[in-house]
Image 1: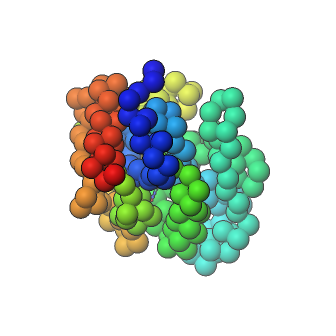
Image 2: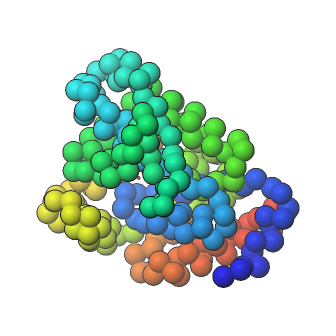
Image 3: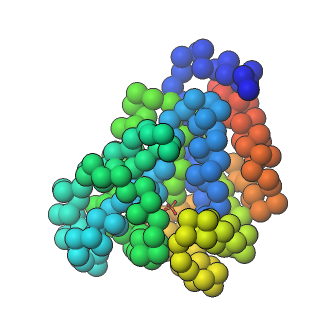
Amino acid sequence: MIRSRFFFWSMNKRIVIAVDGHSACGKSTVSKDVAKELSLIYIDSGSMYRAVTLFCIRNDVNIEDHQQVAEALESINIQFSKTEKGQTILLNGEDVSDKIRTKEVNALVSQVAKISEVRSKLVEIQRSFAKTESIIMDGRDIGTVVFPDADVKFFLTAKLDIRTNRRYAEMQEKGIEGSLEFVQSNLQERDYIDSNRKDSPLKQADDALLIDNSELSQEDQLEYILNIIEKQIREDA
Ligand code: DC
C-alpha cells in the first residue's frame, strides 16, 4: 500500500525513531513493521547484547569478572546482514540469529547488559547506524541514552500475563523448550535487572509516548504508531 505519509521522505530528512519497553511486549514486531512501511533500517539492539552473551557462554568468559568481559569484547565483531529470511545478526561473521534466542542466553543476557564496558561498546555501534541512514531501533535505553534527540520515542509495555503468553507461544513455535512458569519468572527477573541496573536502566524517557498494548491488536498498534510518527514529523518540519 502506498501511504500518503511517505511525503516526509521526499524532504530528504534523516529520522531516528526510538522504541523502548519491557521484555516481550512486541517491540521488535512493531518496529519491523514500521521499518517496512516507512522504508527505514530496523536495528534490534537487544540482539547485540544477546550476541555478546552467546560469545561469553561459548568461550567460558566469566561474566562476573567485568575485566574478562571487557577483554573478550575486543574479539567480538557484530554486524547485521539482509538475507532472504530477513535481517540476520552476525557474530564474527557467523549468522547467530537463532542461537541468541535460547534459554541459556535468555537466562544470562540481563547480567551481561549490566556491564558498563559492554554498554559503551554497543552504544557506539548503535549510534554509528544513524550516521547515514534513517532508522528505527528498539531496546531499553534508546530514547534515554543512545538517541536522546530521537525524532519520535515510544515506550511500550503490556501486562505480565499477556507478555508471558506471547513469549511462550513464540518459543513453542520455534521449538524452544521452557514452561510457562519459567518464561514468566525469566521475564520478571529480566525486567527487574534491566530497570534497576546502575548504567542506563530501563525507563521511559520524559518525551516518550507510553503505549500499553495489552488490549491492542498488532494492526491497530501499527496504525496508531504510524499516525503518531507522521504527526510528529509534520510538526517538526
Ligand atoms: O530485547 P531483548 O529481550 O532481546 O533484550 C535482551 C536483553 O538485553 C534485555 O534483558 C536487556 C538488554 N538490553 C539492554 O540492556 N539495552 C538495550 N538497548 C537492549 C537490550
